[in-house]
Amino acid sequence: MPDFRSPVFFPDPETADRDGLLACGGNLEVETLLAAYSQGIFPWYSEGSPILWWSPDPRLVLFPENYKASKSLLQTIKKNIFEIRFDNSFKQVIHHCARIERKGQTGTWITPEMQEAYIKLHEAGYAHSAETYCKKKLVGGLYGVSIGTAFFGESMFYLMRDASKVAFYYLVKRLYQWGFTLVDAQQSTKHLKSMGAEEIPRKQFLHYLKQALIDKSRTGKWKL
Image (cartoon, rainbow, N blue to C red; front, side):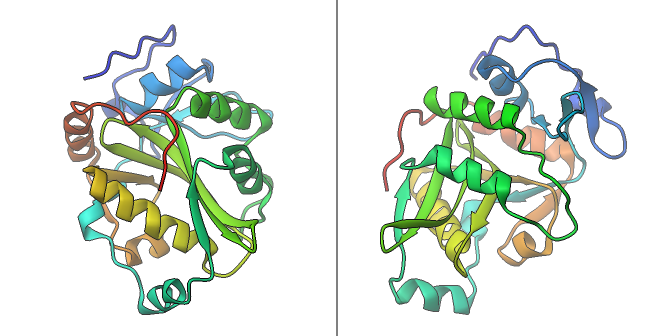
């Protein structure tokens, strides 16, 4: 299991409150983020707020072997509209994710501070993006954190219909080929559940995560 040392101490994830809030404060240095994710903890807060750390219960998880693509998505993929790349435009992906408007949400939790932190994590080899291009233009994608055989999905965006879904399809397909054991989706959504994601108790999630961390992390630039 990797030993990510950080000056920030995290409480036991099982002590989080009923909403999943575990701690407040700290920093977003690479070592801190790696220490957090390796314990099933992630940051989520609004600009102007202190850094908030979460470990929700239950946890939404997609086991790669259970991924289900809809018929309409498979039809889109067969049309070969999009070109898929990994880690080609990480900065642009996270910037798009921060700017995209979302229903029922004002502002963004992907603050400039968060963007800078995940770009550093990407440069360290632990944060990755899957991207879709149409006519050489970036039109969709997602980014997340990878440690061991666990991938922690963070955010996605699309400028064309199905662009982010296609990126996710190819990412999960490759994660499965690489032997990844879980994709952490953090918060529950009907969209992700329709793809095969399921809610599991936090204790069970932490057990699966511990097993995933035994394996060596696939760091550096990913290639499709």
